[in-house]
Length: 158
Image: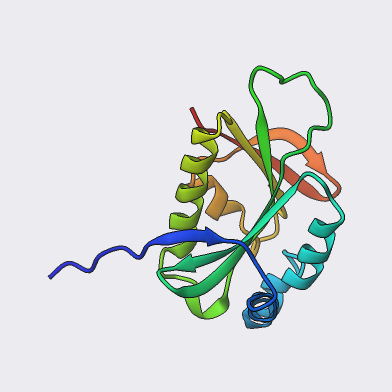
């Protein structure tokens, strides 16, 4: 008997869910915490950035992660090919290794395509314990950009 894939979806964070979303950061291993800001810090930053979009990630009815994008543009040279920037992404420790991260990113790719975006950018550490291989496995490629000490990555959506 085949198990069906969970319904991965994004939900707005509200007064009832914010504490649980923040506590997800505590489930990460120490080396993972060095690669992503806490969800509490991310939510606070998002509230002060007009271009931020952030959501809780659910697998069916279980809270499994957090995602945050920046829809702002540092320059207008790519007006014909808008890009979004994946600012933060995490899957809670107990939910890792269950394909939720890949499924959430695939859901995001589809959502962005439907909104007319042709590219998703992000950045990450190149440390051995960082998420670089995860992103490359999803089709991201190094784009020659650097953001402080993080390498820039991009993935075509169209």
